[in-house]
Image (cartoon, rainbow, N blue to C red; front, top):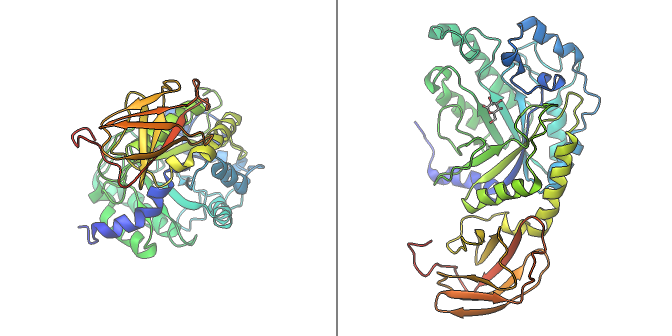
Length: 401
Ligand code: GLC
């Protein structure tokens, strides 16, 4: 049973809706091998064989302040890090497991260091936590499903560890569950778990992957516009954990398209980086983030706190809205004259966000023309035209909005 009102969830979500853009980090023992975060399963490692990786996990270049700085520079306003992925290895200090970074070769609590960096630099912190732990019987996908009691210790561990991550590191902004396999919410006792989490962290946002809707849903590598709060999580190449061979990086342009498509649909984008075993971001990720950051510095007004717009120009691209302003996110630059229609409010100014260049405006009925823009788009990725209205922007035909 959900005991809280919709308004409480809405209040909690306010900063997150404003933020719109976050960084996901997948980092763990698997990062040493560079074959993705499912390597344990995909190569069918033995438990002891995999556990030996912990002897080698002594990252020399883990500098969380640099991670935070790169996220900030890219315009991201929150970060979600894997405290423990499906392989069971905790980056943090767990009392209920010996398979942790502080208790093995690294002898460090990486989550504590990460949280410190975020706090110092004013970055919101989210914790990813995988319910499924492959080290438990019946947990590996495709293994024979066991009777409920076999999973009891895995469930107990999840309850204990979620409590730990919600008590040991001060304020946690997001709890990002993953993978219930093979059980349902009843077996995980997700309702009870989330009630405990909310007692420990009253302001926390909880995702939907423990089988309960909670604060937001999490479409993965796909954009699915929903009426409830949603966040699309995307890989930057095709893998979450570090994968040396995976050079299928999205271009900065594609990332900007993803982000603007999310904002146009009222959602967030959580973009992943998979640092290597030493703690370094792949060079491609660094470059992509740098380009996205340049775009965000010029065009962030169309992203932060922005949501769906009642007025748009679909032939040209997407649109977002903040109060009395609409941002046309132009994917197909039409030349010096920009025309659109079905506009039910008066436009008082139109300018290119990145250069400040204004256009003259002609408005007849619900048709609008902007003249005097450059023939060629000034921004190589996506150009944003900021429209200011003399009141609430409205479409002339509500069916169109
Ligand atoms: C999937 C994968 C996992 C990844 C997650 C991110 O559930 O199993 O490796 O962490 O997606 O959304």
